[in-house]
Length: 303
Image (cartoon, rainbow, N blue to C red; front, side, top):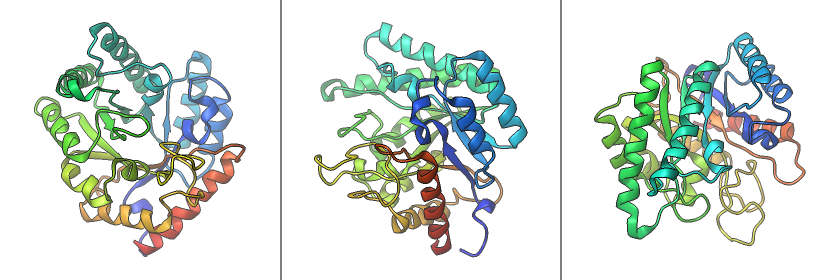
């Protein structure tokens, strides 16, 4: 496409995936976020919990100075702790709700426009009960966030039987879930991730069209799913062009075209579309980030 991609979307980067040593809210958070803020290619950034209050305040100043749009990914609050927001044991569900509400507070503190999380594991025999628990939890999160401001609560769709084994899940179930929550809360939406499509066994159109009216956020990335023995198998978010990977320029072109066709990418209110890429082994984060930028540049030229 001849027109600038920045006309239609805010290009973002998930900080805690590009720099995975920070995923538990510790590590070299300040300098790595600063390096992203100094890169004018990105006009959005997705951060997660920052346990040190002093570091959090310093990051807040950097992000305010950089004029970046900020989103908050609460997935690490669940994935690194084993908490499950659709836990059928009430004590476990409440523990998950507690950390996510703490995350909502932190997201507002950091000036985030959106707050993302994921559904938890489930058993097929109690799938409907888990679904109802997820709906109840989500409504509680939406109510909690709505009192404090206008930040969006966003569920990211993950695989249901390969890696994360999350309840949501395939597009049709995601649609049913979003319909249930939206009946009461307009501050809720869904997130689709290119790197999860093959894990869910859906094409871009199959994954996106059923949920298009609920879609508020998107991720760009890669996955390895052909063979369990291959390096990076599962939801590891390797770089584009990774050996055995599913996504590169052509797949990103198709993803962006579908997002354009449904009006998700638009001039009036450009959404955040972020890279979710993670260095594999001893790969350098900055090289992986540069890989992503080159891939998007090539893809956008073909959209």
